[in-house]
Image (cartoon, rainbow, N blue to C red; front, side, top):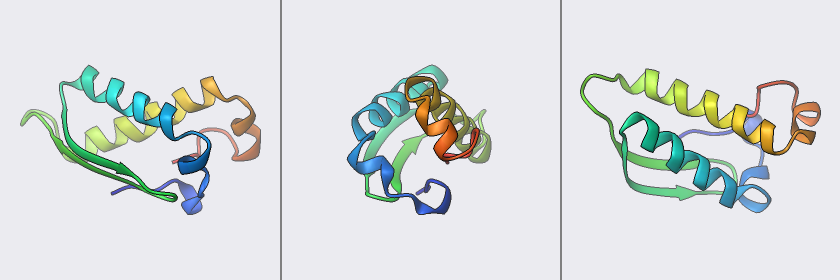
Amino acid sequence: VFTPKYRRKIIYYQYRKDLIEIIKLLCQYKGVKIIEGHMMPDHVHLLVSIPPKQSVSSFMGYLKGKSSLMIYETYPELKYKYRNREFW
């Protein structure tokens, strides 16, 4: 389970479909298998199978950091509304 900064309820309503695709793409890049996942209004549930060579914390840092950058590239107006790189 991880949440956007300040538990902003923005992810479910406006950017849900894009975030789902971004998370799938990033997991595919790292060889991580998504077993189950749910997008809630203010947080994300993920059950993933991470390769043993990679730590959970390094993968989550990668996932949150890269997904934030990808959201800001797609929706540049969020960068000014939520400050730079602090969506997650």
